[in-house]
Image 1 (spheres, rainbow, N blue to C red):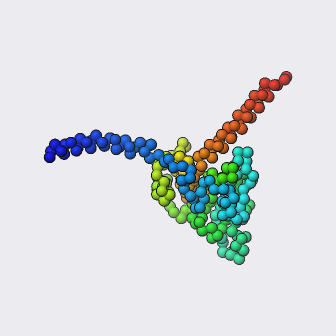
Image 2 (cartoon, one colour):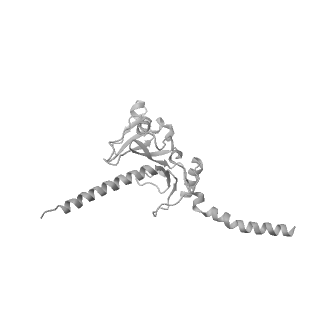
Image 3 (cartoon, rainbow, N blue to C red):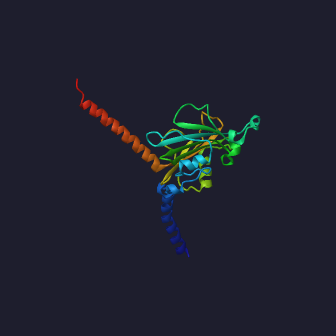
Amino acid sequence: MKRTVLILLLTLSCAWPLLAQDKNDPKSTQCTLPLDSAPELRGLRLGATQASVLSRFPGTSTGKPDPFGISQMRLTVIETPLSSKGLSSREKAVQPDITSGAGEEAGFIVDSAKFPALKGVRRVRVRFIDGRLAYVQLGYDDSIKWSGIDEFVATVAQTLSLAGNWQAPDSDDSGTKELRCGGFVVTGNVSGDSSDTRIAAQLSVADVAAAKLVAKRQNDLKEKAQREEDAKRKTFKP
């Protein structure tokens, strides 16, 4: 009997370091999900066509794509004041945001009562690349008080069934953590937003391949400009 117990203890003592190593090994908690398994945020899923996303919010639009194929839109979600209850449903559902400055991001104000899927959301940002949804960011209101970034991302991971190790990005922002997967990146933030003090937390999901494509296009354009500058210097005549 004593011999059996001794063997069992020796076996466990040998196995424990392996179990501990597996638990602390980053590879064992790495998210390998592909793009088609990216989470849907309030009905917005990466890869959706630009037309299908805009059709969910009649009256919205984006500007012309920039040289890299990017077009963007921002939705500010508000509650309709009692003074405007007499307006037609179409008139108050979506309106251009005249307070937003000129830029590449088209801005609109949407009535939360007309879009129940956005309950608890203060702002929506979407980015399209070549007509496909490549980035979604939601800014949530302060109806929920988060104790910190760890509590927020733990709740997100459980709700969206995302397994993996959330890490702080390469910055000094202690209120941000991200989960890098095979085809997408999910980023959570509870640092607040200077443009809207009622935004308590933000969550975004981005297409990894699309981001790399834009980076390549930007690099190609930079290299082309450099070659043109080099050619001008070579052919310069005093």
